[in-house]
Length: 64
Image (cartoon, rainbow, N blue to C red):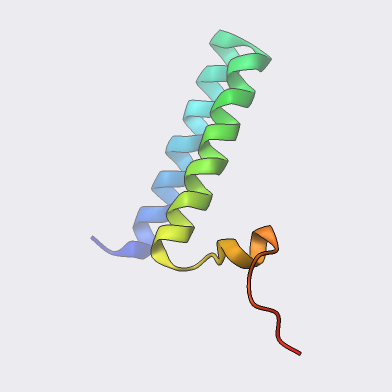
């Protein structure tokens, strides 16, 4: 499958999940789904190597 077609579908699925959480559960479940989705996004970026967690947390090497 073409990767350009995959990410809009993932975003749409996440939006639908947020919509269902907000519509049927209220704000609490909405924010839980939002937080877990953002956490999953950051973990996925870190696994792919697109996110440097050391630099994000301030423990990375500093260039002078």
